[in-house]
Length: 480
Image (cartoon, rainbow, N blue to C red; front, side, top):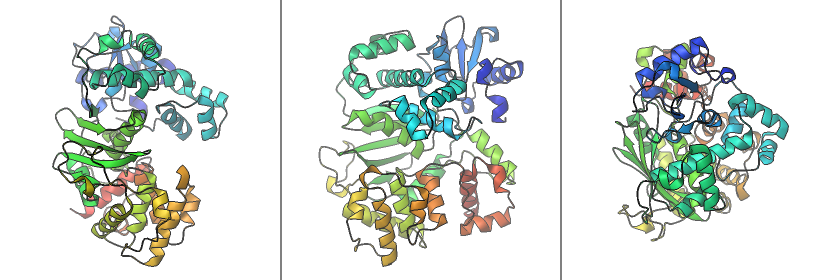
C-alpha cells in the first residue's frame, strides 16, 4: 500500500474518509507490519495504542488515528501500558515532508536533549523556521516534542529495566526525581511508581526489547555481520549479535538476541555511563536496521524493475557502528575480498583498539578479556604509521588521512573525504550507505551491481528513496 495513501495527513489527524477506511482495515488486522506506522487512540478510555495491541478492539466510532505518538499525547491521550507505544518501531523517515524536518525530528529525539536554538543552528535554519516546520509536521512545537520523547524514553526504562528511579531520571536527562515524576504524570497520566509493578533490584545489565516491522530477514543480517565480524570485538551466533564499543572514556557492550515470534530483539547492554544509554540504543536500532518498512521498500524495488519473485523478503541494511568505523573498513577493503578486508581491520583493532578490562567484561562472555577490544579512536589511527597492516603504503596513508578528519570529534564534509588520495566515489558511497545509514545510495560503480543490473534491467531512480536496498538486493541476487 503506498505510503502517502496509507499514513494519515497531520492536517486532519488522519480522519479523512479514505484514510480512516484504510487505517481501520489495518487496525482490525493487527498485522505487525503496520506497527509504528500509526497509533490508535480510544476516545472512551483516553488511551492510545499500537495497532498490534492485544487489548479488545474498540468500535470504529470510538477511535481516532495519529501518525506520531507525540500527536496523541498532545491531544491528551496517555500511552497504553500493555502494548507500550514507546516501544514501537519508529515511523518511516520518508513521509514527503523533506530531509530537513526528518533530520530535525531526529535531532530533537536525542537524549540528553539539546537546546532548540542549537539544533536550528546545526540545521542551518532559524529557530523560528524550525518551529514552523515541526508544528506543520507533527502539530506541536519543538520543545514540547522533546519533552514528550524524553517522557516516553523514561517510561520505557521504568517498565522494561530494573534501573533505580534515580538512574532513570539521570539517564532520561531530568535534573531530579521530582522532574521525572511531573513528566510522567503530565504525559502518561500516572506516576513512576505505578508504572513499575516490580521491586527494583541491583542489575548491572540493562535489558530491553526492541521491535521491528516484519518480515525481518535475520539470516541475511546475521550472515552479513558474521562475514565482516572483527574477532575480539564482535561475535555472531545463530540467533544473536554482540560487540564491544567505545562510549566516551569507557567501553560498553551489547548483545541482541533475535526473537522471531515477538518480531524483535531482546537487548542486553552493559554501560557505565547511563547518560549515553539513549544514544546507544538508537545506534543499535540503526545497526540492525529496525526502523525499516519492508512494505514500502519492496514496493519501490518492484517499481525499479526487479521481478517480485526475485526479491529477498525482509531485506535489511546492516550498518556500521559509526561513520569513522565504516570509512576505515571501506578504505582497508578496497580492491580485496571481504574476508581479506576483515582480516586487516581485525589487525587494526587488535593493535590500536582499547582492550577490555575485567570490570568492563560482560558477565556471560567466556573469552579472556585481554582478547577483547573496542574499535580504535581517530586519534590512535592518525598518530600511528600502521606498519602492521599488510597493504600498499598509499592505502595506509589514506586510512591515516581519513582518521585525521575525525580527530577531536569532527565530522568531515564529503568533499574532504573524497579529496583523500586513494579514496574514490565508490568508497564514499559505501560510507554513506553503511556509515551514515543513508537508505538511498545506489552503488552503480560496483562491479557486481553493474553485472546484476544488466541481468535484471532496472531503473535505479524508480527505487528512490530506497536505492541502498536495491544495491543490497542486486548483491544478494549475485550469490543465488
